[in-house]
Image (tube, rainbow, N blue to C red; front, side):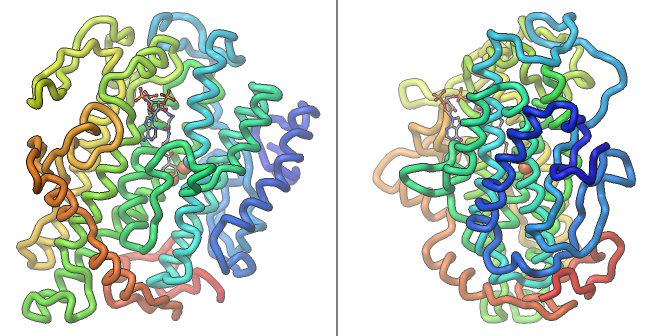
Length: 467
Ligand code: BYC
Ligand code: FE
Ligand code: FE
């Protein structure tokens, strides 16, 4: 382990002078990007952060107050016992590769660049949220997510520098040049160009969009390209916290709304809370945008990635017995002549849809937990997930208009029905009006319930950020 190095790492960076130098040249550019595009206004404050200093059980989560620019962004890969075969695709039996075979270079680079691009994008999307934090606890969680997304960028940039030579170095620079929402230099995937204007969106984003990260990283953690596999395995340990922030964030909003409804004869708004139907519209928006991230339902790209052993299914090794996926079909609803019909799709071409299926099941489980919280608070209201066809911009359903329950909508009022299920300008203005910073230790904005416990067994009123 080389923790005192300029770039903390467990990949023996000091034995590869060229690579070390290339990364040390990228480091100041990263820091410059962080100061420019990272969380605005808090760079000189002490934040109670978890830093990975090694990959083993006690080492990967060291908690202390640090200033964000001093966070030790490092390169950590989960070690593996012995060698293992690729395990799926056209050649499941061959030994997994430690270098990139020539014919896999372009697709692999694309996967890494697409994955890597989302990480700084999310930091850019969230950069102004600190100014309206509902508590110091939440402020700290935002920054924890932000520094770790920065580290995820490091993880992908390491792969680019280490395995893709000059092309990789150029791609790594491009990661810092694109900007979320910039019409001239946008981020690659559209979801990462959508603004996150308030904390309700932030919690929905970490719930739904970071969860795409869980499933994409899960699929890449099966990769026959061993460095990718080990990189993604370690990223997944950090990802769990991001999902926690999103899921519990919305749970706390729902609990508070239910409490305020009870105390005020159902009028949550009058009491300064967020009505549950409004929360539902934010769920509709971020869930549908997150579904887009799985790509087209029927995709030859996904078939190629699988055939090459670059990207498997979620839990490929554990969950499946046939790892070639040469036989079998997935029934994919498509639109033909204005009607939904089932298309029998060869499994390999439906890999995106398989992953999306697993993702949706995971979301459904979380929705059940949200609804249980509403029930506990004595509310009869419930939240739901819209149908996967609703409000899509990518894939089979992007060309048509679907209701939240999945039926095709036609006619003059179709667009209006979609709009009515999404946050309106009025919703946005109302939520914005609630976003007033609360920075006293232990205090919380009125629209959100406090968490049950603090971070790392600290009390809820701990000074998570020293302002
Ligand atoms: N927006 O066959 P198709 C995370 C493009 S999140 C714009 O449908 P494919 C995180 C596609 O590139 C995890 N364009 O797609 C979360 C292709 O372009 P070309 C991110 C899109 O390739 C929160 C065309 O449409 N990780 O970590 O099978 C905070 C048709 O291709 C979109 C990954 O994405 C879109 N939404 O699948 C921080 C993993 N979707 O070839 C971080 C790596 C598709 O026509 N990426 N297109 O120019 C992949 O595995 C695949 O690229 C995708 C797309 C699953 C994204
Ligand atoms: Fe990430
Ligand atoms: Fe994340």
